[in-house]
Length: 395
Image 1 (spheres, rainbow, N blue to C red):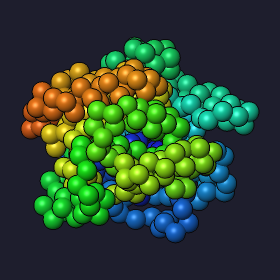
Image 2: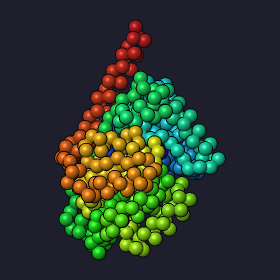
Image 3: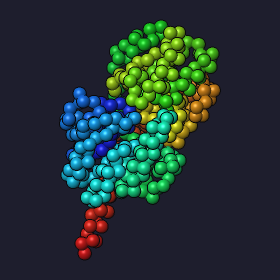
Image 4: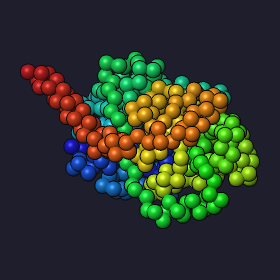
């Protein structure tokens, strides 16, 4: 099967969406499908075309940026060519250009599936409000043109204003999550570099430094955690410098985090490759996901941590709360509530053995091959439906 994948940002850009898209594309390619990713050349240093892990990547030139979005003048022509050259179309939303590509899928009778990752909520400001409206309009058009919509969990679908309008063609498929076992020397190396004093417990957070991630909530909860665990330290893994669209938030948060860093209770680890992330989790006593709104639909890092036996404290958001509910490996804290977050962390850190769960079961639930199989079955079903309509029309 020839599968065209469309999204604004692809690897090496780092976000939950791009990691999901890469894992699924690679898993589909490994199952013998011809997979092409159509995306933006957001960094001019990236090649116009390349093959990554068996996946062909086509990057369109970017004329200019609009908030977190990009303008790609040649995308329309290339999208037409690629939709015609493929059997099915898989689009990752939010994406401003998805409506145009989905329309081509409908016109050219190519089954088109949307993966809806999260709602869009850009930072305050009149320009971002306009951008929000534009993205919402285009996402709704994409939904009307598409043959099917996939989301991570039924919980998120039932609470999303966007997805509730299209429930007749929405289904849930668990996301692909995989992480290699770390090398013992990598685990020890991270401990030496970022925790030379051997502080315990180690609280981890893995995310971009972005307003919706709730870093400020963790910072506000930290004093109460330190009252109970005065030797605790936070390890923050992920981009925290030059995060697109988050300059104002960075200016607000960084001085607070640096103050705790000076006292030995906070460390910025930066962006880590997959093998280092595995070592990161092995050093943790708990992972925290204090996200604030529906731009977070699941939190793949939760599952990565659980695969290494690390419990999680997550926000009580639709979708985000599901990994803890499914596995019992953690606690759920109220959204934006430092007191609730602190108490949840204290409960987990006080009785860690109660939250260990079954990492092998977690790995099996989220194998990329299982996700790819589910999409493959969906594609075959949609192809049969479209071909059946074509046959009826020819009679």
